[in-house]
Image: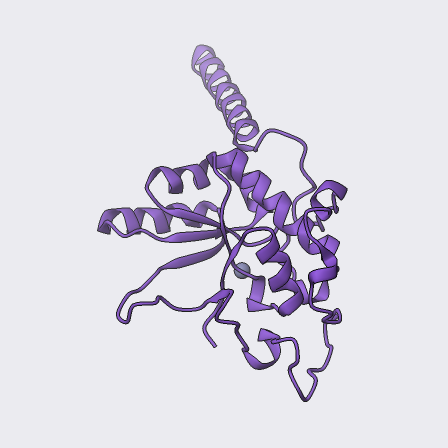
Length: 215
Ligand SMILES: [Zn+2]
């Protein structure tokens, strides 16, 4: 009886140690901003964008009313899109492209299972804070043949943020994805579809194609 209890105690201890080890290994190694907080601007990243070429669209703090005339093509006001930079549908009629946002999380595994069973490929727009927590799930998506895009670090509406803050949201997430899966993503989806000509200019200068919601 005593021996049984001893073995039980040892088993529980080993299970706890294993679980702890797995959790530690699951985190993406490196120095990262705290998850789910604003990512700090980095001067060398800010310098990648020529701000003199950006549209002079004013920042739009939460609750800012929309102007009567949408000069800066603000999707959140008028669902305006720019065909030269925004992709909202496939070029060929009848084609579909499946996309999933806000992961990677444990739910991503269920989506991957459903897609892989059916031989369907999709694009996952990842949040940097989630990539740090679940890098192995993102890698699993890539290993199954799926595509990865950037969906910011914190999921904040971009037209509310300064240019330096937006660049940080993009580049911290891009760097995390590169470390997790081995390549630099080229597609971007703005959280909540929120984008204007200033944000488009930043993304275009950083080499991104914009996959936004349909108007
Ligand atoms: Zn989202």
